Amino acid sequence: MSTKHAQVRAQQRAIPPLVDRLLDEFGEEQHDGHGAIRVYFSHASRRRMERALGRHAAGLFDRYLHAYKVESTDGQVITKGWRTGRLPRR
Image 1: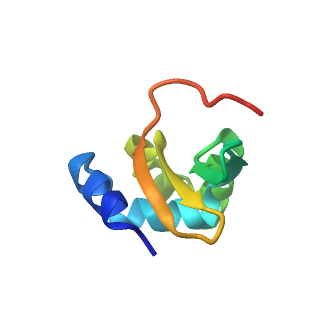
Image 2 (image 1 turned 120 degrees about the horizontal axis):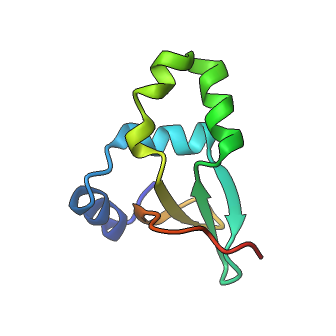
């Protein structure tokens, strides 16, 4: 479930709904230290996606590998965006 804010941000930032599902299935989760969870694609999640979908099919999603979303601890999507740098490790 997404908030209205997350839906607007996804549309503004051109992040298709399929990327949200790929993040759910293959993304890495990291607590942000403020009560939310970041979900993003890592090298390991990329390899898992290649094994599940095949190398060619996973390659079609290369343009979306910098997408991320922020969820509350109850699973509601707060916002979506594009990583422009490395995520800080906590």
